[in-house]
Amino acid sequence: MGGRRRPTMADVAREAGVAAKTVSRVLNGEGPVAAGTRERVLAVVGRLGYRPNLMARNMRVGAADATVGLVVPELGNPFFGAVAGGVERVVRARGLTLVLGCSSETAALEQALIATFLARRVSALMIVPSAAAEHRHLRAERAAGLPIVFLDRPAAGLTADCVVSANRQGARTGVAHLLAHGHRRVGFIGDRPAGLHPRRERFQGYRDALEEAGLPADRALVATGHDREAAAAAARRLLALPDPPTALFTGDDLATTGAVVALSGAGRRDVALVGFDDPPLAECLDPPLTAVAQDPAGMGVAAAELALSRLDGDRSRARRTVIPTRLVVRGSGELRPAPGAPRPAPS
Image (cartoon, rainbow, N blue to C red; front, side, top):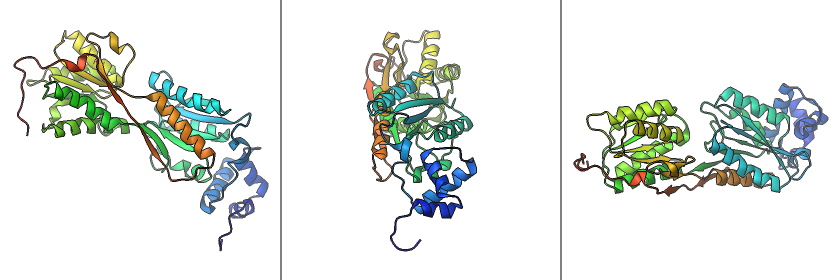
């Protein structure tokens, strides 16, 4: 297409080899369209840079049947429940309805849910990606103007808006808090560093705090716990080392719960603990848990506001919004090393 003329629906139809009415059906979600035809039309829309008027009927803010799709890994996890609550509060105020789906941390199910939401012509799509998910398949939808926002974890293979916690800074603050109370051997328990984005960032924050304190990163003090039982076993292994840690930093709720189980079972009240995330009843533990608290509701609010700004016509570059964390001091992270505990000289 030569010159500066903006592409039209007729241009899309010609390039895709379909009727203009078919293009309208794809963009407006009106009537059945074969999946292959729909993908071809959306690919041409993206290539030509055609911009429909906010995807017509369902893309109008305030339409009675307009919906926003949200995919989360777990419905029973309070963190994702709070995220969904933040999203719902914002979209409801604009007259839209939130539709929620659970991927069970499975890439195939996540993609199937996304396809279902797209078939329903959602006005915006928000996704907490599963561990192995890939998102190149959404390039045509994003190019066509559909607002897509990723939460907690960035997209893979797609440049898109995302809203994440300050994972690295929060972990750095939590570990630095332990170091400030005299600990020089701090163990880390969490998912493997090569796992999900938040885990990688938190592990790097742990290393940052050690480096800033002039302490070596001892691989013997790093353990993996994918669930509560594995985290408890990891804590027991660390505490059984010839030169054990005097403090533990746990990278998520499951790791924290496992560490608490291990410490309680061993009758250990001399090991300091700071956990990332602030689990329910943390203040009821003995001692109460010092934690790096996230703001999942704030994450949901920020993601929904970003999606609605795109729906209103914001076509600026993809943005990354970082939601701050805060250190909640309660007692477990303020225990000092027992007299005579090893204090290696800084490297």
